[in-house]
Image (cartoon, rainbow, N blue to C red):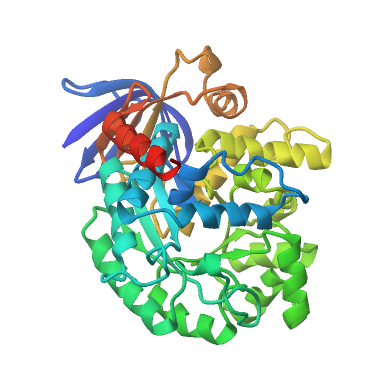
Amino acid sequence: MTALYFDSALLPQGWEHNVRLSLADGKIVSVATGAKPQPGDARHSIAVPGLANVHSHAFQRGMAGLAEMRGPEGDNFWTWREVMYRFLDRLTPDQVEAIAAQAYVEMLETGFTRAGEFHYLHHDPSGAPYANIAELASRIAAAAQAAGIGLTLLPVFYAHGNFGGAPPTRGQRRFLNGVDDFARLVEDSGKIVASLPDANLGIAPHSLRAVTQEELASILPLANGGPIHIHAAEQTKEVDDSLAWSGWRPVEWLLDRANVDARWCLVHATHMTGAETARLAQSGAVAGLCPITEANLGDGIFPARAYLEAHGRIGIGTDSNVAIDAGAELKMLEYAQRLSARARNVLAEGEGRSTGRALFDAALRGGAQALGQPATGFTPGAPADIVSLDPAHPALLGRNRDSILDSWLFASSRPPVDCVWRAGRKVVDGGRHQAREGIARRYRDVILSVLS
């Protein structure tokens, strides 16, 4: 048994002072408020729960910034995708592992304590399976273990290049599996996550572009009660192609035909009608929002105000990992709403309520649900995933209660994270990951090799 003592902490019922968290076996055993520190307690100032990153493609961290040169035609998601295909063509398993470890270190340093890895890079550069079909999944797990982040592994089923079972393109050859091979991949991935503390497994049909109705029906039982994630309605072209194929929009199609419920996370869901927005909220599913990537790719703006007013659930993710920062994702979510509505504090829950608190609470609840984690926050039995904030950070000076969250999200140019405990083990101290030096060195060598 160990204990951490905080001057203030954000508990499920709100902010409390003089909070003592007792930890054992990676979980919170007890929470005492108005407590006195005991000999041997580690003392800190401000504690908030760690956040879940619901949607990551870790290997894309290595190409961040390489798609910012305009081509001869208007750039969009589809031209960015071609840059991504060229980058991943060069990656070996060792390189994938090194890039993922760097991404996970950066996540922890900004307040994420669990990553949902939407893992679709399966085969060698020629498209041939490795001898171990889960070779690259094992590298993702090794990277998560090296960084100490919690892992929800989401092996991706990808079989086609567009709606209606269209043939895949050459750039997609490293992603492709049939239903039987995917079943083997999921089975082997389950063995991999079983070796990691607190890891879990779901599945991810990539999108309705990449899976037929029959294939979707075949693979859904493989989730075995775990999370189900899918890209949906990220781009207007995707919506147009879906309408041309089926007469239905992607989110509408899923809601009508896929038994979407609380196990599901629809990633992006950017382009929805008002009816789709209300129905997705009512389904109990989570909308997995990645505001920085969505802005970087020019995707569009998610209808967050209408969705949250309909009691919809959201999680946040870093997607392409072009920039990794938990607070900045939440800030971008709110700022996009402000630009669209030409108003301020759009996602606050009412007059006199904190915008930062509303965003943080929503991401905490929805993120845990999307990654199959039933317990959240500082409650007995929950994972001891704890983030301490630095009260001497310029953005947090003199702040208390919800103004801490507001100033973290909207007034800091660098994350005010001081320490991070993941499953009770301190992995970040003084704002720096304890394994940063070695992981960063390996990452540097890999990137210089890949780009040479």
